[in-house]
Image (cartoon, rainbow, N blue to C red; front, top):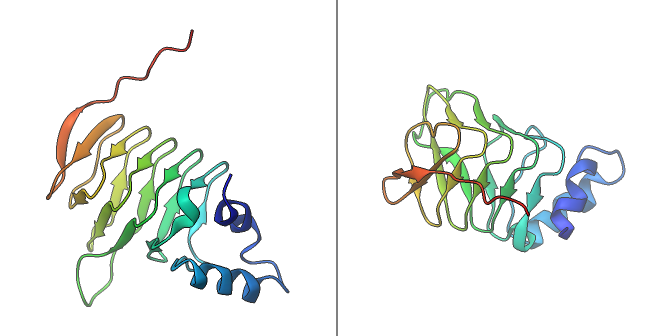
Amino acid sequence: MGLITKLLPYRNTPGLRRVIREVLYLYGCDIPPEVKFGKNTEIVHRGIGLVIYPKVTIGDNVTIYHGVTIGRAIRSGDIGETVIGDGAVLSAGAVITIGPEGRKIGAGAIVGANAVVTKDVPTGEVWGGVPARKLEKHRPIPVQ
């Protein structure tokens, strides 16, 4: 478990807010206190370059790699809520654009490296490319 992952639960703790904000700054992370994280969310590679818009809720057991951006697709106007479902994976450099309608990444979905997501990603699908599109249905590897 990385440093950023360990610090996330304490972001709003009095006395630690500023220290954590400075650590996030050193790693190039922009994670506002309004972002809601589920249990066991993992930020990989110290979250270097991670940018998340405030109206985002991230589910349980989500893995987010470095360089991910979850942010506005429009310059002005209100944008909707965005939900990253339980067990989703956002690979390195992925961009999730948020418009007025918000965005939903389904549970267990995988967004490939450097993909640019402009639509909702259904549960359990693998998406990649620019703009991102469905590549396949995710097939979990059986545990033996």
